[in-house]
Image (tube, rainbow, N blue to C red; front, side, top):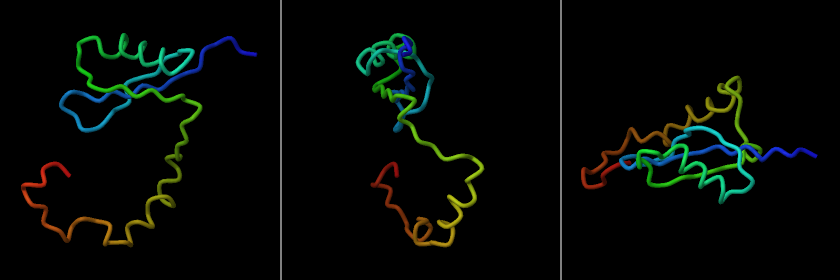
Amino acid sequence: MSHEWPLWEVFIRGQHGLNHRHVGSLHAPDAEMAIRHARDVYTRRNEGVSIWVVRSSDIAASSPSDKGPLFEPANSKIYRHPTFFKIPDEAGHM
């Protein structure tokens, strides 16, 4: 049995950003402690407004070598691309 704490991936949402971005990894015994450690390590200048932590072992990702088979089918579905629509200025960020 391993005595090492699990690895957590840390995502921070900046004050002026709309999305969280990956900033690094850390070890912690649980999610609550991972958030506390992430706050101490990755938001020293009060630049974040939200922190997400995810166990590294819970992340599933595609391989860059699967790019073609994974994304090419969407190119033939032109209705998924918002090129036909004029977005009103009142809509803001989209």
